[in-house]
Amino acid sequence: MNKQSNAYTIIYIIVLVVIVGTALAFTAISLKPRQQANADADKMRQILASVAVEVPGNEAIAAYERYITSTFVVDETGNRVADADAFTVDVAKQSKESASERLLPVYECTLDDSSVKYILPMYGAGLWGPIWGYVSVDSDGTTIYGAYFAHQGETPGLGAEIEKPAFSSQFSGKKLIKNGAFVPVAVVKAGQVPAGDADYVDGISGGTITSKGVGAMIDNCLQPYSAFLESLNK
Amino acid sequence: MANKSVFFNPFSKDNPVIVQILGICSVLAVTAKLEPAIVMGLSVIAVLAFSNVIISLIRNTIPTNIRIIVQLVVVAGLVVIVSQLLQAYAYDVSKQLSVFIGLIITNCILMGRLEAFAMANRPWPSFLDGVGNGIGYTIILVIVGFFRELLGSGTLLGFQIVPQCFYEAGYVNNGLMILPPMALVLVACIIWVHRSFNKDLQEKQ
Image (cartoon, rainbow over all chains, first blue to last red):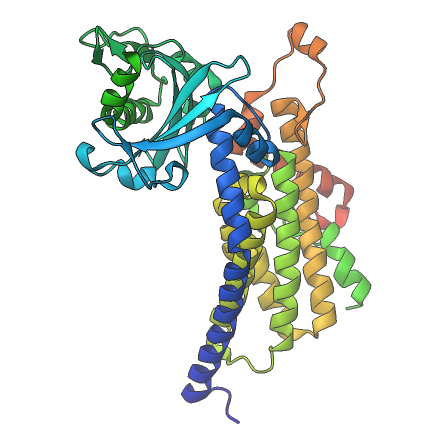
């Protein structure tokens, strides 16, 4: 058989690709449930990080079931949406919808001192890729209790600093509702103050675009919750 | 070549990283901590050994003009399988390694061994060659990862090594160690030490 002929070459590569493709499809399908479980556990870990409950990945599920007492989905008017599962709502997709169309997941968390916090997910864009986070709010809906931020590939040492507690801990105690109206927390350059009376935190020096991304994410993702937060305040 | 030297030569005299200077990019990228360095090394050993065996088994059937493509398909398939396995069984590490597992496909050591060895040798020597080169690569990764994590973070495999009283006495972690350029400096130091012990690797003046 002539191994250099075109027919042999084409048949050879087709057979090879089919074999490799089958092997990959089999691997992907058989490992899918395990990978999904890992991704879910990681999401639970991140949710808990926003209320300062730090657990390793393998204990996340148990801790999540212990602290998160209920989950629900609200709409822009603050009413609960029936038949929607908060955990499986795709925040990335929802954050691109107009505010009135969005499904807004809320995780209700009861801490060890039996105080209740509400955890709200956020999703936005940094400099190089997506950034996301969770912010927890006190039971009266006005004050931020804690925040957690993560990113896919921001610049190490600059934009990537948003995932460090040094940045996220600044959010504790900031007000989301002032004089009965919703004001998103602004992220500004250190030493500056924003226009208006919004509470603010210092951005990352050298990570201006990522910092602005965080500010825009808070604005975009928490604004639709304003009716829900104000209803807590009453 | 005897099987023994096929296996042991890549450890030192024919090390892929510090003698052939291949695969430097991943050495820079994954060695800031020791654990990802070890996992990366194990992944490369697995991919290199199996791709060497597979290519060696089919080496007489591969049409010459598409042999690089065939090698790439085999390597890419194995790399995706390794990456899927890590996501299923070592999720945290797979997040740290992120894109670098995928980039094993372009690791020059793999193409180099496939083209230079597996295409011309039987499966068993090819397997030994793959494992040997993988270990040679891992040794360097672990040495670099060890120093970078110890001096950069004061930890090893996540455990605190530098005692708290050092920090209280004014010791600070070397932030430069965390950044990729320091891996290059460390690799250069390893090459320096290695060549000064192996006179036959030094060029004649």
